[in-house]
Image (cartoon, rainbow, N blue to C red; front, side):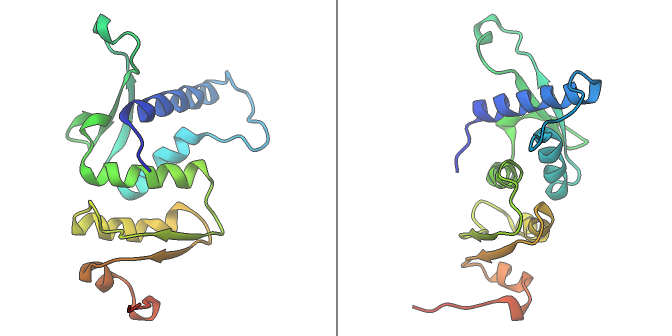
Length: 163
């Protein structure tokens, strides 16, 4: 799933406003089935990127950008950076995080094809360890061509397919 930066900025900004309205009491009570997506996405993001956090939207100042979405900043405790400056790993993982939260993925079988794509080995390991924490009672079927990924998974959980 490809999520453009503008769509991501728009969704995160709107969800953050809703989150703030809950925290300030403007929204006294959530309706049945309603949830604070911003808080859940931020928590899922921190599950994978433990040293990172959301800074939030900052309005654009250039008059030419008046109709554009506000910049949305992230931070890794050393640097503040905009969504457009996310690492390749963050770009690859963010849609996974959003799907888990948006679709409330629990009690499901999840297929992930070539999980190693666009991720360097430490991030592959981090993602594999974080996946069970993103939802409850899920089963993962993961395809890979990576010997490194194979080493991270207990032998009893590996099924090799041959053509």
